[in-house]
Each structure stands twice: as structure tokens, then as C-alpha cells.
Image (cartoon, rainbow, N blue to C red):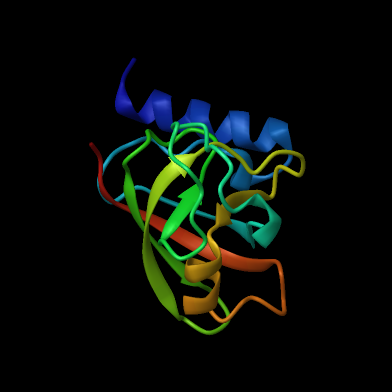
Length: 129
């Protein structure tokens, strides 16, 4: 499939899902996605993530639906331009399609989003394992 056709197909799929945020991020350095981010509850500390790691709220990690485990991404809060680099080690968020990331507490603190709970972000793929 030619690149132009593939791009058109991805946008058509996103439109059919009702939101560009629903479009998957392809694991290529420089790929980006915008949507909402939430953060993990402290009650999940010590539980296993989908990658098999134990969730540690003090590490800069995140959950994404499709990016490979070990992918490093820069997450930028759109209203303040604060950013943090995290490593994908879990799957999620589940439920609402406009939510693209679940962040560890440390990452949420770096973005100053603890009180807000949910903020609009842009993620940019920095490194793919």
C-alpha cells in the first residue's frame, strides 16, 4: 500500500472511531499523538503491569494501548507545555477512547497534574526498543 493511501486509511479509521485521538501511534521515532492522560492510583503500587514489571509510583512509566513495552516517549501537557520522558511498561488506559496514557505518580507530578487528574497531552515517540 502506498504511503498516501495508508495515511488516508488511518485518518478514515480515526474519523470512523469519532476522534483523531483514537488513531494508533505507529512505533516510529517522531510519531506523535494527542489526547488525554490520567495517572495511576497509589493503590496499584506493587501490582504487576502487563509487561510483568511491578508498578512503582516513583518511576517515570506509563501505560499505552499499542506502543511496544520499553518505548520511550516525551509527554507534554498542552496547557502548560511542561513535559516529562517516560517508558511504556503497561497497557491501558481502558474505557474512554480519548484517553491515551495512564501515567505513574512521578510522571504526573512532573506534569503538575495530580489535582487535575486528567489533562490534555501530546506524546512523541523518542525511542523504540
